[in-house]
Length: 276
Image (cartoon, rainbow, N blue to C red; front, side):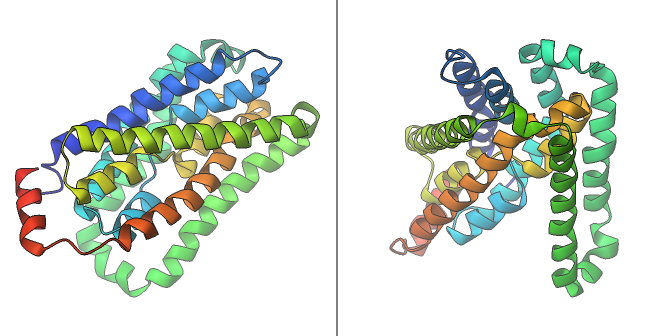
């Protein structure tokens, strides 16, 4: 049932790989006196990344949305992002890639081995290790978060050593906060309107809003490391780090609001899911 929600998957992918990049391009057209080229570059990279997996599913569940569809669409976004994000980077950020000495085919191979291969192996191994994972969920969840924390810490530490605070000012931080809030607000508004126009039921609307409004930090940091020179990585992921925290806080509040809505009669839910 989750796989068959093709309208929902199409809208999520359009939000992730069309709406977000369009907003990133709009940001890149702003005058340098308002937004520095460094911030523009980081925001453009942020907008071409795939959606998150874990937080999208968790918030969809909290909001009582279509969790099965969230699993499918978030996974699909991440798998396609392995190919789409480098291609968009090659189209929209060509000068930055050239300055980093990036070979697009080599970059895609690196990203496939780093992100897609473990993703597929993990899913295919589920019948063999699923029970063990369920028994050790507490320890493995801490290991998972710790791995992401170490990846981010390593990348940002390298940026500090390379002098990120000499290139990023306090005004840049304020600009990133403002643009993050603006972009997130626009995407949340448009995804909800798109769900209404497409006549999605409430559970699918929740999934679209929760999955279509996020960007993956766990995927973004390795992709940035593969796409750009080491000295650029910390500056480029700074908007992503700030946006990621903002999306978690805002979407947690929205998910709680959805979750506290008046219960829909069961037969109405079933009819809505069947029609989707």
